[in-house]
Length: 171
Image 1 (tube, rainbow, N blue to C red):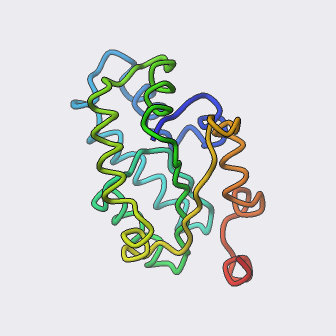
Image 2: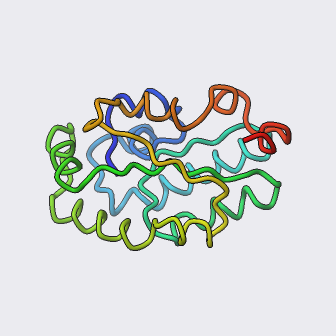
């Protein structure tokens, strides 16, 4: 649920909502105004990568089923598996990480997202949506940076080249 420079370094800028927003609008536009255009741009980039057989790591919260379903459908249409990296930090850790961010999200918003995630990102829910693999990744409380967590969750060959039938069947 939280992002920092380590996670950003592991996710290309064209699939980070904050980087797309900055490129499109600078830093002085509210999320409410920018989000529709930002996510439309990110969605287009993700779909293009999937159609080319490339991996598409998306750095967005996506705690609700509604936020995930469109991406799951894109992958299903072309036969790609969908893997989810689920960060399992407790609320106190997430709030502490948030307090250290350059752009602090109000604590009540972070708390509400954590509640939604607890309801809508269970193993059962994710599997019912068509997720092929759920990877619970360690976080800062385990002394693992977001970049290290991504590397633990997704093998290098998948991050570099995407899914190939034999990689999916093996793993």
